[in-house]
Length: 297
Image (cartoon, rainbow, N blue to C red; front, side, top):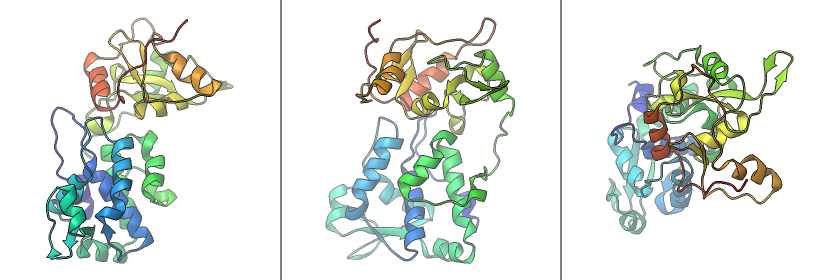
């Protein structure tokens, strides 16, 4: 049985690039808990708050209850649910899952495969990360679900569907003249830029192309905040800052809140600006809540 393929082909509700990371998040959480206790069950009532937090932090704005993946992941052949009445999930209702003492865990066949081949866990986790989240979030997401991946498993191990264009970074950084499009940071050590990255506006995992019109040159801080939905891009190519972001320090105000309403820096003349379709996808699927009003000059 190809467990990597099962991880890659979780049945998720999709439409026009809509994100539905509910099952991948539960699966990653279950793998993390397996590392702690390979035979333990996850009682729904005990893990509901953890799952709710993961959906809030790493899911799109149109979130659903954690009961949804707890029930529906069963259909993918990697997860089982039992209640005090026996095998089988009582449904997607939070009340039913709580009142029946529902508990889930990885199916016996998968647990046996993980015992035979311990490296399988890291490979499955990387598949789930690669196909559902941008690389900038992988490390913190592993921490959030309690996963410890071996260094060798940080390589991209997902089944090859599309090949990444290795020129993307250089093309995007050149288009933006090696400056962060949000804050203007342009640090170098000698001739080598440091702390500058090529960010995908529409995530590569969701069919975002490796092209300049889907890229931004961002410093490491603003890349992370862009992928977390704290920052976005408005129709007028000005920076959006989420009202959900809270920061009282001078650094938070200067580096984040003060960006609200600023025009993007770049791209240079002749380079493709961000395509509207990619901006709309990020605004709908990643940006958190409503934008703050433009910062006072």
